[in-house]
Image 1: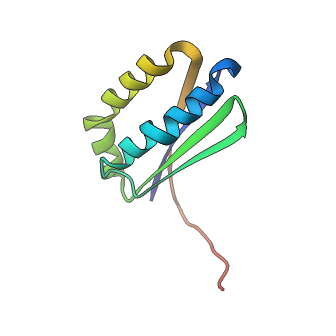
Image 2: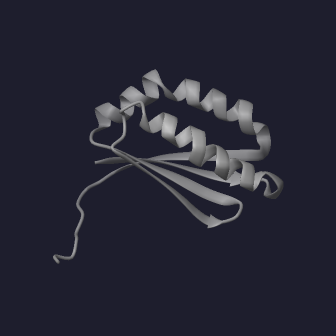
Length: 101
Protein backbone atom coordinates (compact mmCIF):
# COMPACT_ATOMS: atom_id res chain seq x y z
CA UNK A 1 0.00 0.00 0.00
CA UNK A 2 1.25 3.46 -0.93
CA UNK A 3 -0.23 6.63 0.50
CA UNK A 4 -0.01 9.96 -1.23
CA UNK A 5 -0.91 12.83 1.09
CA UNK A 6 -1.67 16.40 0.16
CA UNK A 7 -1.98 18.91 3.00
CA UNK A 8 -3.56 22.28 2.29
CA UNK A 9 -3.34 25.57 4.14
CA UNK A 10 -6.29 27.68 2.99
CA UNK A 11 -7.21 31.31 3.51
CA UNK A 12 -10.01 31.52 6.12
CA UNK A 13 -12.32 33.38 3.73
CA UNK A 14 -12.09 30.53 1.20
CA UNK A 15 -12.17 27.50 3.54
CA UNK A 16 -15.82 26.59 2.89
CA UNK A 17 -15.31 26.93 -0.87
CA UNK A 18 -12.25 24.67 -0.73
CA UNK A 19 -14.08 21.99 1.22
CA UNK A 20 -17.02 22.01 -1.17
CA UNK A 21 -14.71 21.84 -4.19
CA UNK A 22 -12.71 18.96 -2.72
CA UNK A 23 -15.73 16.91 -1.65
CA UNK A 24 -18.02 17.52 -4.60
CA UNK A 25 -15.62 17.64 -7.54
CA UNK A 26 -11.88 17.19 -7.06
CA UNK A 27 -11.78 14.00 -4.99
CA UNK A 28 -14.58 12.16 -6.86
CA UNK A 29 -12.87 12.93 -10.18
CA UNK A 30 -9.52 11.65 -8.92
CA UNK A 31 -11.13 8.47 -7.56
CA UNK A 32 -12.70 7.91 -10.98
CA UNK A 33 -9.21 7.60 -12.54
CA UNK A 34 -8.92 4.14 -10.96
CA UNK A 35 -5.43 4.90 -9.64
CA UNK A 36 -6.49 4.81 -5.99
CA UNK A 37 -8.50 2.28 -3.99
CA UNK A 38 -9.51 4.77 -1.28
CA UNK A 39 -9.33 8.48 -0.55
CA UNK A 40 -9.85 10.20 2.83
CA UNK A 41 -10.45 13.91 3.34
CA UNK A 42 -9.58 15.12 6.85
CA UNK A 43 -9.67 18.43 8.69
CA UNK A 44 -7.53 19.46 11.67
CA UNK A 45 -8.82 23.06 11.66
CA UNK A 46 -11.01 25.17 9.39
CA UNK A 47 -7.92 26.32 7.47
CA UNK A 48 -5.82 23.12 7.41
CA UNK A 49 -6.99 19.96 5.64
CA UNK A 50 -5.40 16.89 4.15
CA UNK A 51 -6.35 14.35 1.56
CA UNK A 52 -4.92 10.81 1.84
CA UNK A 53 -4.91 8.84 -1.39
CA UNK A 54 -4.30 5.08 -1.06
CA UNK A 55 -2.89 3.13 -4.01
CA UNK A 56 -2.37 -0.62 -4.19
CA UNK A 57 1.13 -0.13 -5.58
CA UNK A 58 3.80 2.41 -6.42
CA UNK A 59 3.01 1.72 -10.09
CA UNK A 60 -0.57 2.94 -9.60
CA UNK A 61 0.65 6.12 -7.93
CA UNK A 62 3.17 6.65 -10.73
CA UNK A 63 0.37 6.21 -13.28
CA UNK A 64 -1.63 8.90 -11.50
CA UNK A 65 1.34 11.28 -11.33
CA UNK A 66 2.27 10.67 -14.99
CA UNK A 67 -1.16 10.62 -16.60
CA UNK A 68 -3.47 12.69 -14.38
CA UNK A 69 -1.75 14.90 -11.78
CA UNK A 70 -0.96 17.73 -14.18
CA UNK A 71 -4.61 18.14 -15.14
CA UNK A 72 -5.87 18.03 -11.54
CA UNK A 73 -3.19 20.42 -10.27
CA UNK A 74 -4.00 22.92 -13.03
CA UNK A 75 -7.72 22.69 -12.26
CA UNK A 76 -7.01 23.19 -8.56
CA UNK A 77 -4.90 26.30 -9.27
CA UNK A 78 -7.58 27.68 -11.61
CA UNK A 79 -10.24 27.16 -8.94
CA UNK A 80 -8.38 28.19 -5.77
CA UNK A 81 -5.53 30.35 -7.06
CA UNK A 82 -3.20 31.35 -4.23
CA UNK A 83 -5.88 30.86 -1.55
CA UNK A 84 -4.67 27.30 -0.78
CA UNK A 85 -1.06 26.20 -0.54
CA UNK A 86 -0.41 22.45 -0.96
CA UNK A 87 2.39 20.28 0.40
CA UNK A 88 2.75 16.71 -0.86
CA UNK A 89 4.27 13.55 0.62
CA UNK A 90 4.37 9.90 -0.42
CA UNK A 91 4.34 7.23 2.28
CA UNK A 92 5.03 3.51 1.73
CA UNK A 93 3.41 1.17 4.23
CA UNK A 94 5.93 -1.05 5.94
CA UNK A 95 3.52 -2.96 8.17
CA UNK A 96 0.15 -2.43 9.85
CA UNK A 97 -1.61 -3.94 12.86
CA UNK A 98 -5.31 -4.34 13.65
CA UNK A 99 -7.21 -5.58 16.65
CA UNK A 100 -9.02 -8.84 16.00
CA UNK A 101 -12.75 -8.74 16.58
